[in-house]
Length: 339
Image 1 (tube, rainbow, N blue to C red):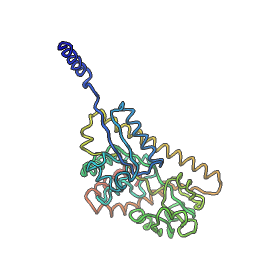
Image 2 (cartoon, rainbow, N blue to C red):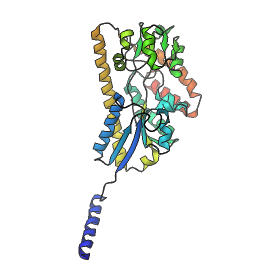
Image 3 (spheres, helix red, strand yellow):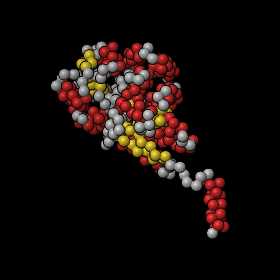
């Protein structure tokens, strides 16, 4: 019996020597999304967690919780830092109250005309490094970025450029977005999303900052506001995938690389999927024959972006990191001929 036990032990040791470990270590994490269950964005995020499990051979399991499951949508940063949650998939502008730099990098009004522009800025133009610095100061690690896409613009009246915004009664949330539209001569009012349809239908406002084209179409907004601007020109949110830094640091390098690669795949799947949904909605709206889609020229988009810069400058004055975002962002836009 002793010889048998010794032989078995030696066999296990030999196996460890050959494979590196007798049993693969498993990692289980809880992430919370800023989207509700059933929302298309949440379904794409769930697809990422499934991909992680598949690519890791079951070593990494991520339970994705819908918004509000553990903490409120604007509390996940602190929850991840404190270990209550392991990670988050959220619009980074939710943390603007902690540092205005988050708001500026997450949705600089008028900066982007295509998701690819924002993605390139983050991945190749200095945005990733800023996100790492910002989140790192709160004990988080930035894994990667995605976006639900460029919002369309809802309007009852024709809008072909910046000059057409003068005197326009429109719905916009308080803050940078409303400020930039006001600088263009519009008259923004703050209305809850639940009142947008009724307000446009009754003529309380003539236009609205609301959502992407497919959502606007599904909710009937294009039926009462027959002059949408698509693709949009004003809002494209940065959605971060991030997690507790100590838990990230504890992962082996191969799993870190896998997480980064799968976030990139999720990013492209979401962008392409939602873009296809928008294009399908555009074709359906055109087929109805009652709407006119307005696509602003590059020159008009640049005019609106220039108005945005003045608001970005105001935000930049509020913190050293916000100034760093402003400098990095404007340098990138100038280099790409967008500013």
